[in-house]
Amino acid sequence: MPNDKGKWLPAAPPGEWVFLLADANNTGLQKFVDGELVEVAPGDYLVTELDPATGGPNPLLFDLVVSPKGAKECPGDPKGGNLAAKVSVDESAAKAGAVTHLCAYNKAPGTGPKVTVTKSFVEERDGVVVWRIEPSAAADLLVWDAAASSCAEFNGAACGDLINSGYGKFYATAPGQYFLVEQKFEGTAEKCEVSNTVEWGTDPNGPRESLTVTYRCSGAPTLGWVLFTALGLVGVGSAWWVSRKVQP
Image 1 (spheres, rainbow, N blue to C red):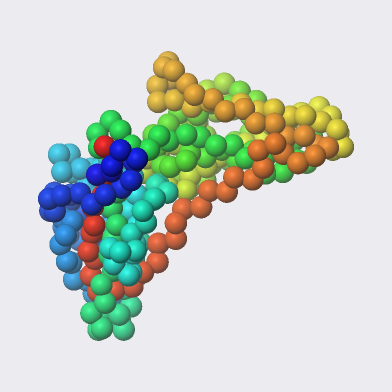
Image 2 (cartoon, one colour):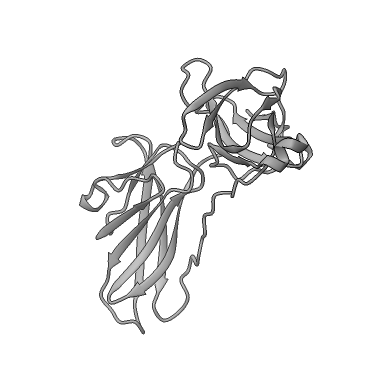
Protein backbone atom coordinates (compact mmCIF):
# COMPACT_ATOMS: atom_id res chain seq x y z
CA MET A 1 0.00 0.00 0.00
CA PRO A 2 1.21 3.57 -0.61
CA ASN A 3 2.85 6.04 1.69
CA ASP A 4 1.40 9.50 2.35
CA LYS A 5 2.60 10.62 -1.09
CA GLY A 6 0.52 8.02 -2.91
CA LYS A 7 3.41 5.74 -3.89
CA TRP A 8 2.45 2.13 -4.64
CA LEU A 9 4.06 -0.36 -2.26
CA PRO A 10 4.04 -4.17 -2.02
CA ALA A 11 0.99 -5.61 -0.25
CA ALA A 12 1.18 -8.31 2.40
CA PRO A 13 0.57 -11.04 3.30
CA PRO A 14 0.79 -12.96 0.01
CA GLY A 15 -1.84 -15.37 -1.24
CA GLU A 16 -4.95 -13.22 -0.72
CA TRP A 17 -5.61 -12.07 -4.29
CA VAL A 18 -7.20 -14.54 -6.72
CA PHE A 19 -6.45 -14.67 -10.46
CA LEU A 20 -7.88 -16.68 -13.35
CA LEU A 21 -5.73 -18.22 -16.06
CA ALA A 22 -7.65 -18.59 -19.33
CA ASP A 23 -6.82 -19.56 -22.89
CA ALA A 24 -6.83 -17.16 -25.85
CA ASN A 25 -10.63 -17.58 -26.14
CA ASN A 26 -11.06 -16.55 -22.48
CA THR A 27 -12.04 -20.07 -21.41
CA GLY A 28 -10.99 -20.48 -17.78
CA LEU A 29 -8.28 -23.04 -17.12
CA GLN A 30 -7.35 -22.62 -13.45
CA LYS A 31 -7.33 -20.19 -10.54
CA PHE A 32 -4.20 -19.14 -8.68
CA VAL A 33 -3.15 -16.56 -6.09
CA ASP A 34 -0.47 -13.90 -5.90
CA GLY A 35 2.91 -15.32 -5.03
CA GLU A 36 2.07 -18.63 -6.72
CA LEU A 37 4.18 -19.97 -9.57
CA VAL A 38 1.98 -21.42 -12.32
CA GLU A 39 3.47 -23.65 -15.00
CA VAL A 40 1.97 -23.34 -18.48
CA ALA A 41 2.49 -25.02 -21.85
CA PRO A 42 3.39 -23.02 -24.98
CA GLY A 43 0.44 -20.97 -26.22
CA ASP A 44 -1.50 -17.73 -25.79
CA TYR A 45 -3.11 -16.92 -22.45
CA LEU A 46 -5.25 -14.33 -20.71
CA VAL A 47 -5.03 -13.52 -16.98
CA THR A 48 -7.66 -11.57 -15.03
CA GLU A 49 -8.20 -10.88 -11.33
CA LEU A 50 -11.28 -12.19 -9.51
CA ASP A 51 -13.25 -10.80 -6.61
CA PRO A 52 -12.85 -13.49 -3.90
CA ALA A 53 -16.35 -12.72 -2.61
CA THR A 54 -18.31 -12.87 -5.87
CA GLY A 55 -16.07 -14.75 -8.30
CA GLY A 56 -16.53 -11.96 -10.86
CA PRO A 57 -13.98 -9.33 -11.96
CA ASN A 58 -12.32 -7.57 -9.04
CA PRO A 59 -13.54 -3.93 -9.03
CA LEU A 60 -10.48 -2.88 -7.04
CA LEU A 61 -8.03 -3.81 -9.81
CA PHE A 62 -6.36 -0.67 -11.16
CA ASP A 63 -3.69 -2.16 -13.41
CA LEU A 64 -2.25 -5.55 -14.41
CA VAL A 65 1.12 -5.30 -16.15
CA VAL A 66 3.37 -7.97 -17.63
CA SER A 67 7.01 -7.77 -16.52
CA PRO A 68 9.27 -10.40 -18.19
CA LYS A 69 12.21 -9.14 -16.08
CA GLY A 70 10.60 -9.75 -12.70
CA ALA A 71 9.24 -7.70 -9.84
CA LYS A 72 12.07 -5.17 -10.05
CA GLU A 73 10.65 -3.96 -13.37
CA CYS A 74 7.10 -3.41 -12.07
CA PRO A 75 6.15 0.24 -12.82
CA GLY A 76 6.28 2.54 -9.82
CA ASP A 77 3.59 4.76 -11.34
CA PRO A 78 1.16 2.52 -13.26
CA LYS A 79 -1.07 4.19 -15.86
CA GLY A 80 -4.11 2.08 -15.04
CA GLY A 81 -6.78 0.52 -17.24
CA ASN A 82 -5.16 -2.83 -18.02
CA LEU A 83 -7.66 -5.26 -16.51
CA ALA A 84 -6.43 -8.33 -18.40
CA ALA A 85 -2.89 -9.48 -19.12
CA LYS A 86 -2.14 -11.15 -22.45
CA VAL A 87 0.90 -13.42 -22.53
CA SER A 88 2.28 -15.56 -25.34
CA VAL A 89 4.55 -18.47 -24.41
CA ASP A 90 6.74 -19.94 -27.15
CA GLU A 91 8.35 -23.36 -27.06
CA SER A 92 11.91 -22.12 -26.63
CA ALA A 93 10.99 -20.03 -23.59
CA ALA A 94 9.04 -22.92 -22.08
CA LYS A 95 11.97 -25.31 -22.52
CA ALA A 96 14.31 -22.77 -20.94
CA GLY A 97 12.02 -22.47 -17.92
CA ALA A 98 11.60 -18.73 -18.37
CA VAL A 99 9.39 -16.91 -15.87
CA THR A 100 7.14 -13.94 -16.64
CA HIS A 101 6.08 -11.77 -13.71
CA LEU A 102 2.68 -10.06 -13.43
CA CYS A 103 2.47 -6.77 -11.56
CA ALA A 104 -1.01 -6.34 -10.04
CA TYR A 105 -2.16 -3.00 -8.59
CA ASN A 106 -5.28 -2.97 -6.42
CA LYS A 107 -7.01 0.05 -4.92
CA ALA A 108 -8.33 -0.03 -1.37
CA PRO A 109 -12.16 0.01 -1.21
CA GLY A 110 -13.62 3.43 -1.98
CA THR A 111 -10.28 5.03 -2.83
CA GLY A 112 -7.57 5.15 -5.44
CA PRO A 113 -6.65 7.22 -8.48
CA LYS A 114 -9.58 9.30 -9.69
CA VAL A 115 -10.88 8.49 -13.17
CA THR A 116 -11.63 11.47 -15.41
CA VAL A 117 -12.78 11.86 -19.01
CA THR A 118 -10.65 13.59 -21.64
CA LYS A 119 -11.56 15.10 -24.99
CA SER A 120 -9.15 15.75 -27.85
CA PHE A 121 -9.48 17.28 -31.32
CA VAL A 122 -9.20 14.78 -34.20
CA GLU A 123 -10.03 16.72 -37.38
CA GLU A 124 -12.14 19.48 -38.95
CA ARG A 125 -13.81 18.98 -42.33
CA ASP A 126 -16.86 20.21 -44.23
CA GLY A 127 -18.43 22.08 -41.32
CA VAL A 128 -17.81 19.28 -38.82
CA VAL A 129 -15.32 18.89 -35.98
CA VAL A 130 -14.48 15.38 -34.83
CA TRP A 131 -13.64 14.85 -31.16
CA ARG A 132 -12.25 11.83 -29.33
CA ILE A 133 -13.70 11.14 -25.87
CA GLU A 134 -12.14 8.59 -23.50
CA PRO A 135 -11.69 7.81 -19.80
CA SER A 136 -8.31 8.19 -18.11
CA ALA A 137 -8.65 4.53 -17.05
CA ALA A 138 -11.24 1.81 -17.59
CA ALA A 139 -14.25 2.54 -15.37
CA ASP A 140 -18.05 2.34 -15.29
CA LEU A 141 -19.13 5.85 -16.35
CA LEU A 142 -22.06 7.56 -18.05
CA VAL A 143 -21.09 10.20 -20.64
CA TRP A 144 -23.08 13.12 -22.08
CA ASP A 145 -22.27 15.40 -25.04
CA ALA A 146 -25.21 17.61 -26.00
CA ALA A 147 -23.47 18.96 -29.13
CA ALA A 148 -22.70 15.56 -30.69
CA SER A 149 -24.44 14.90 -34.00
CA SER A 150 -22.99 11.40 -34.45
CA CYS A 151 -21.11 8.89 -32.34
CA ALA A 152 -18.84 5.93 -33.15
CA GLU A 153 -17.83 3.50 -30.39
CA PHE A 154 -14.56 1.60 -30.06
CA ASN A 155 -13.03 -1.13 -27.85
CA GLY A 156 -16.11 -1.81 -25.75
CA ALA A 157 -17.57 1.68 -25.30
CA ALA A 158 -21.32 2.07 -25.99
CA CYS A 159 -22.75 5.20 -27.65
CA GLY A 160 -26.27 4.41 -26.40
CA ASP A 161 -28.45 7.55 -26.63
CA LEU A 162 -25.55 9.99 -26.51
CA ILE A 163 -26.66 11.83 -29.66
CA ASN A 164 -30.29 11.99 -28.52
CA SER A 165 -29.68 14.05 -25.36
CA GLY A 166 -29.03 10.83 -23.48
CA TYR A 167 -25.78 9.21 -22.43
CA GLY A 168 -23.21 6.75 -23.65
CA LYS A 169 -21.32 4.32 -21.45
CA PHE A 170 -17.75 3.38 -20.59
CA TYR A 171 -17.07 0.12 -18.77
CA ALA A 172 -14.55 -1.02 -16.17
CA THR A 173 -13.97 -4.18 -18.23
CA ALA A 174 -13.03 -2.37 -21.46
CA PRO A 175 -9.52 -0.86 -21.41
CA GLY A 176 -8.70 1.32 -24.43
CA GLN A 177 -12.34 2.29 -25.05
CA TYR A 178 -13.29 5.62 -26.62
CA PHE A 179 -15.86 7.52 -28.69
CA LEU A 180 -15.40 9.55 -31.86
CA VAL A 181 -18.17 12.17 -32.01
CA GLU A 182 -18.96 14.72 -34.70
CA GLN A 183 -20.09 18.27 -33.96
CA LYS A 184 -21.54 20.48 -36.68
CA PHE A 185 -20.64 24.19 -36.72
CA GLU A 186 -21.14 27.36 -38.75
CA GLY A 187 -18.09 29.13 -40.12
CA THR A 188 -15.29 28.49 -42.56
CA ALA A 189 -12.09 26.50 -42.51
CA GLU A 190 -10.23 29.81 -42.11
CA LYS A 191 -12.38 31.28 -39.36
CA CYS A 192 -14.37 29.45 -36.72
CA GLU A 193 -14.39 28.74 -33.00
CA VAL A 194 -15.96 25.49 -31.87
CA SER A 195 -16.43 24.66 -28.18
CA ASN A 196 -17.61 21.33 -26.88
CA THR A 197 -18.49 20.17 -23.36
CA VAL A 198 -18.40 16.55 -22.25
CA GLU A 199 -20.03 15.54 -18.96
CA TRP A 200 -19.69 12.33 -16.99
CA GLY A 201 -20.96 10.68 -13.83
CA THR A 202 -22.05 7.35 -12.37
CA ASP A 203 -25.78 8.03 -11.89
CA PRO A 204 -28.19 9.33 -14.57
CA ASN A 205 -29.77 11.62 -11.98
CA GLY A 206 -26.69 12.26 -9.89
CA PRO A 207 -23.90 14.87 -9.97
CA ARG A 208 -21.74 15.25 -13.06
CA GLU A 209 -18.25 16.48 -13.81
CA SER A 210 -17.50 18.30 -17.04
CA LEU A 211 -14.74 19.41 -19.38
CA THR A 212 -14.99 22.07 -22.10
CA VAL A 213 -12.47 22.32 -24.94
CA THR A 214 -12.26 24.70 -27.90
CA TYR A 215 -10.97 24.35 -31.46
CA ARG A 216 -10.19 27.41 -33.59
CA CYS A 217 -10.01 26.94 -37.34
CA SER A 218 -7.53 29.78 -37.69
CA GLY A 219 -5.04 28.19 -35.32
CA ALA A 220 -4.16 25.10 -33.36
CA PRO A 221 -6.68 23.40 -31.09
CA THR A 222 -6.51 24.72 -27.56
CA LEU A 223 -6.32 21.24 -26.10
CA GLY A 224 -4.32 19.53 -28.82
CA TRP A 225 -3.93 15.80 -29.18
CA VAL A 226 -4.42 13.58 -26.19
CA LEU A 227 -3.57 10.07 -27.24
CA PHE A 228 -4.70 7.14 -25.13
CA THR A 229 -2.82 3.92 -25.67
CA ALA A 230 -3.33 0.81 -23.59
CA LEU A 231 -0.02 -0.75 -22.65
CA GLY A 232 0.99 -3.48 -25.07
CA LEU A 233 1.20 -6.67 -23.08
CA VAL A 234 3.79 -8.90 -24.68
CA GLY A 235 5.82 -11.49 -22.83
CA VAL A 236 7.13 -15.03 -22.98
CA GLY A 237 7.72 -17.61 -20.31
CA SER A 238 6.62 -20.85 -18.79
CA ALA A 239 5.14 -19.39 -15.60
CA TRP A 240 3.67 -16.28 -14.01
CA TRP A 241 4.56 -14.72 -10.70
CA VAL A 242 2.17 -12.08 -9.36
CA SER A 243 3.33 -9.12 -7.29
CA ARG A 244 0.54 -7.29 -5.43
CA LYS A 245 0.44 -3.57 -4.81
CA VAL A 246 -2.38 -1.57 -3.27
CA GLN A 247 -3.35 2.04 -2.84
CA PRO A 248 -5.70 2.96 0.04
